[in-house]
Length: 248
Image (cartoon, rainbow, N blue to C red; front, side, top):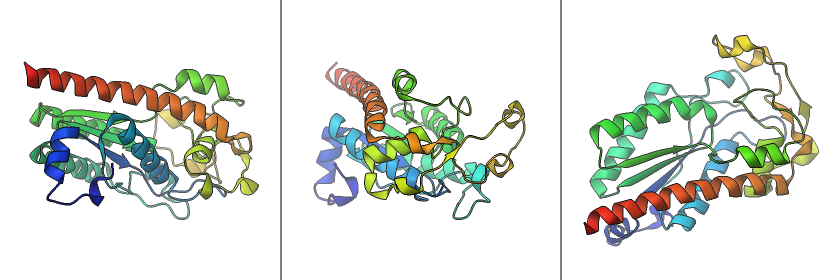
């Protein structure tokens, strides 16, 4: 259910009944020639809509800006600092607590946001222990990815505008994908990139990290559904524990 489409007279009862708010967190950045700048926003938003349905939760409006330091010099990329992102996530969490939510899900579509999400969650944990906070970035996908991937990963953590992310888009937001423009760009990313600040233009001119031409909707479905199952199980478990405490 979409939070912002509700009215102030009905929302209190909905919050009491559903208990969980899901915030899609994305970014605006280069994603090669075949995907839009708002790819991370689209993925986070579509996932949040699905997850809200599966868990009887409320999906908040998308937070559309993220920490994009690594791609800040690519055309179209917009970036905010970790400090700014932490602050707004923390403030949203505090607002949710005041409104009566007891589960807060930050559903992330952009890897660069993860340090800020973790810090905001830890701050909320310390200050509002009654609020269960999750930070999700495609959990539970390891087995599905290893099964569907045709090309080796270019990096242990990064995937970007590649076979994987393009497949996710084909499954969740196909209308925004132009496969006629998909390319194969497999850069060599050395170990030093994990040990010192390394702008991505030092190893790619396209922002594509892999072979986007191999992406399919079917591959995206397998990975996304695995992640949705994992996230759903965690949220429903948290809801069950919350209900048990209320009844005790």
